[in-house]
Length: 175
Image (tube, rainbow, N blue to C red; front, side, top):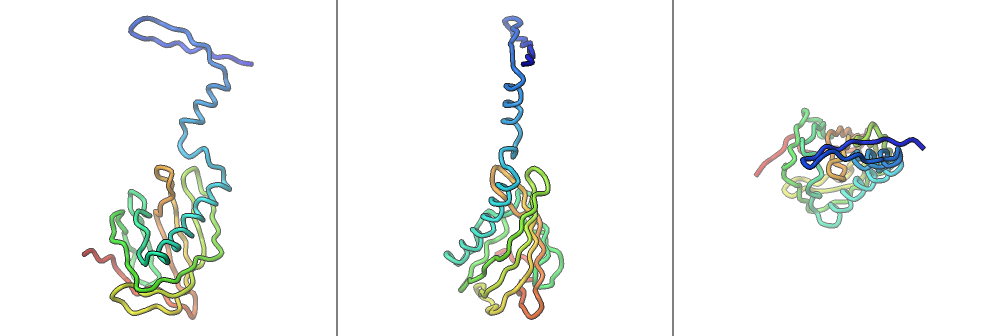
């Protein structure tokens, strides 16, 4: 077994400490953020984030707060509008009805702390103050980054499937 001797200099004097290679590996592993999750665990965590987001809106008729990266997100919406810069503190949408279901979620781990998810969303909903969308069908691509142990949206692209409807919103409305 190889051993490394580290020298520590303090105000009191010099101390030699024997450290094994295994101890160094354990310390390095503990200091690296995000290294604890394997690829399968990341895929499961990101998929759960997506499913939980839709379940929250279905149950509470309001978007789940805090889902965007601390840097916000760049998004193309299914309404066909221009690229949107979504700030972290963007207002959460409220609904009169919400019955959207994400389907066929595929998560690809890009790097430590980054993953992309592609999936379909289907159902119906009605934002407060807007007309209902009865036949929402879209393809979604979302880029997630891990921040403080939570998977946050950093970018997204939504595009309606032929014969389906996208959203009606074309800009962020701050009240």
